[in-house]
Length: 96
Image (tube, rainbow, N blue to C red; front, side, top):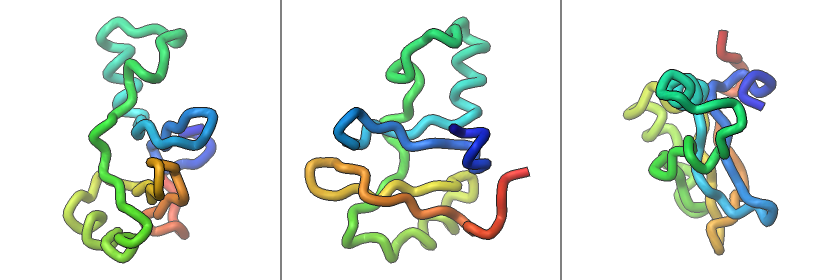
């Protein structure tokens, strides 16, 4: 999914779209370097402290992108911690 979206990261949700965190290609590489295998559950790698916004805070996305240049995706979280949307930094540009 990370390769397909060309953003370097993906949001991780459960079967009910409850947001669990983000995982980046860098986090996967670091886990592999530290002995994880491709069969390791994503729950061992997921970043539960990733930047998120609530639906009513969507306008703050540009501020987060400016403050954290490494962030390419910001999940928008609704009631019950449901993933409602994802704001993409410069959606016209793909990661190279």
